[in-house]
Image 1: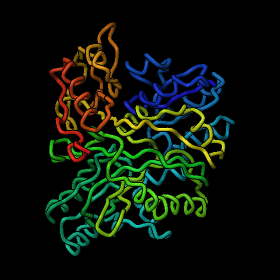
Image 2 (image 1 turned 120 degrees about the horizontal axis):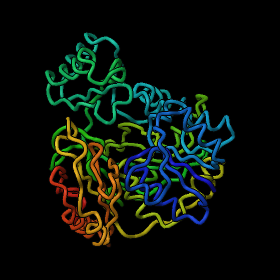
Image 3 (image 1 turned 120 degrees about the vertical axis):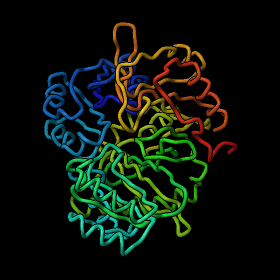
Amino acid sequence: MRILVVGGGGREHALCWAIAGSPLCDALYCAPGNAGIARDAECVDIGAEDVDGLLAFAVDNAIDLVVIGPEAPLVLGLADRLDAAGIRAFGPGAGAAMLEGSKGFMKDLCARHGIPTAGYGRFTDAEAAKAYIREQGAPIVVKADGLAAGKGVTVAQTVDEALAAVDEAMTDNAFGDAGAELVIEEFLVGEELSFFALTDGENVLPLAGAQDHKAVGEGDTGPNTGGMGAYSPAPSLTPELEAEVMETIVLPTVRGMAADGTPYLGVLYAGLMLTADGPKLLEYNVRFGDPECQVLMMRLRSDIVPALVAACDGALKNFDLRWSDDAAMTVVLAARGYPGSYEKGTEIRGLDAAEATGAMVFHAGTKADGDRILANGGRVLNVTATGTTIADAQQGAYAAVDAIDWPDGFCRRDIGWRAVGS
């Protein structure tokens, strides 16, 4: 098969790495890719949101399968365009991608189909939003409705902090059009968990569990990021909990989307809160998590390509995947200043030494300059290791981190703290 992966981050590097190992893959391309992906795929200089350019490339190069990594091209309708051209696309169409493209859309779906989630309100008027906040009190969660690269969420501990978040989104326009509407939610207490499943629109195949760390600071403090690290398996995802999540959240979502005329195909990523009242849905993402994808691909023992094709072809019934019993952990190395402003173009050394420890270094935001590797983003590297236990994987990941020479980068030193010893 001739396969195109869309995107240029750590998630896409992990997908390319897994796909490149498939005997079904005859040619692998990635658009736009990065310096690390270039080891596994031919990188094509087409942006992930250039729907016309990606479609033309897929047609001109007789691509058999397009795996769409990020959410933005899905929301823009890339899967619909490819499908219309007769090309398999792994990922939902634009209508179904609104599960992530609009938090209000997702919350309304939950309300219609009885899916447990936090109480909420939707607002396009700042004063109405502020009145709701004053009525509800704090803590409370303020979310930009649209795509904001993981940065449009404020977990406000005080009413004043929540009011300031409304101003940031609606008055200061910090998130552009994504913040023109807000979803304001009840604050849920519990442990967060990432749950992944493949679906062909009718059949659902749960994947291995994973947990990530969204906050930039150790002890899960500071502003939210796109993710500073992850590990798998998730000790809290027991077989009993998986069955409950499937029955109360994932299956009702897939059935509800089909009933509403927006059938969902691809990977469904449910961000959950394990509350005293049972699991509740925090958010849906319409693609693999980043950096959770990295640890999932490290543990996957089956060929990923048949699973992707089965999802596209409506053939997931009775499909199964094999997973390693080992644990995996990834630690994100980010540019100093992230998630705020940061410098690009600083040189990274020691990558070969890091991989000599037995770890994998997935590139998230890099570019090549001759033989040099330069930082080219906020989250730059995903240093990923496996081990018999989560503690072993943690030790391996940080040993590899310490082999990297990049003074302009930083990482959290406590990834996996909840699970170490499990």
